[in-house]
Length: 191
Image 1 (spheres, one colour):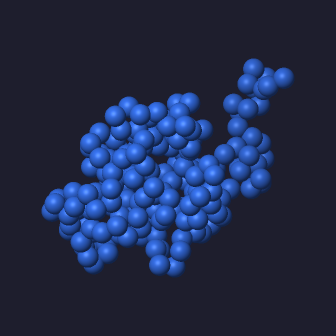
Image 2 (cartoon, one colour):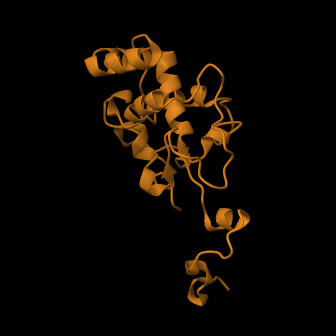
């Protein structure tokens, strides 16, 4: 699967709805998505600073990790695999069991889960606050220093920009005369 990561300035891939779905109190901006991406890749969100969100949601694996069950801090094994997080802007419920109603709620739970990142939010916010570049970036985006709400909004915004589309089927549905030559070669067709 080809994953296309898009920031707001780029077009939504063919086959996807044209708008990024976001709550009115957390509109998508390039600056907020950039902060969210930085946080997504930062190990300071985990209790022992060994794991980042991107460890279980790897771009080259469709934002999953390809493992049967996720592995978190202190090499603890979870009970489920890390789901791919492509096109989550269109989601209506989050996690395998739907326990989070919004991305803003969802993104904070793995940070706190003892087998995933094992942190507590005040400790994470204190680490971010101790970094002058994070303080400046949060102030630029939110007009205030790092806090739990801004952490949630930035991470959720970044996840909303992780999109995949423009498949051969999408192109066909859009009126392309033929599908990819790769798919029309007999050796590539399934019986």
